[in-house]
Length: 388
Image (tube, rainbow, N blue to C red; front, side, top):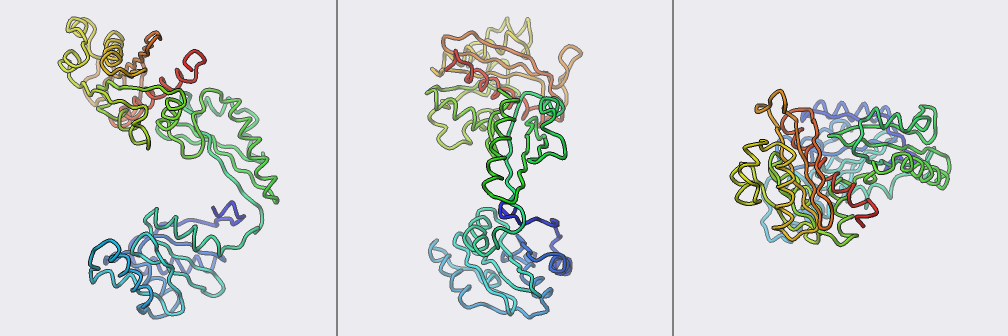
């Protein structure tokens, strides 16, 4: 938000819940910048020390603000609750500063001018901070200071960071504007674009052009922009095509279903599923033959095929995802080491797909990546012309 207004962040520091350290950090920031923004430490408990540290940094005493106290009491009344005495401290404000109303919480913010530097202190609760920043802080900040900086993130899945960087080629040179870089988290490789120009329209135009070029180069690896998750992307495709999905999970223990149903409106396309962690459950709930498990083992192509097709038949969904693997730390063999994961995808009128993946990391990372690989398998099917 600051970059979009041409305000460059000099540095970012995280401070312990220590009054002296917070005060010193504020003093140093005031000396270094014309704008200081702080979040957190405005709650009612003993470790909420920001208001006192700000008073120390200003060299002022701290006093109760009657209007802020009234707003806090009104907030509790609105919830039908009695305000606890400890919440009174949230109405304390350094002399010479002013309180910022919190419309969705009990912690008012604080605004101060210290030696020509604007200081804004907001609560650390993300929802409260965002609303306060948007409604009270942002309108007070100078616009058009220096360059306009716009950013965008293009999310990809299915190739490693080095492979993505190789595909970008000359687009990723360091002296380019817009500047392009890559980051990776949990198997998702994000291409970050930073467009910095003196003119806002030119910054937006260059950002859009670069986005188009990156997405053309990345092709089907791209599943969304900015904060879009793989599950949200899959959900949007299912809704667009008016299709549904069921899940049959073993090693992921319900994680795929959780990711799908984390998305608002997922009841339109996520019909449910099974956590068949044991061989008995695979047989009883999904109809996987005992002899198939005995012959091939639970982590194998025939088993995920049978799981996917069993889930498809029993759920009535259009697609069914199945996953079975060895998440570790034990259970691996020479033929099937820890991280071996089989994924199956069945669909009405479509051939069942199966694939094995060799995933790396600790147990939770393997489970997470197995869920993402499974979702991506469905995503790729949904974007194929014959799947539309």
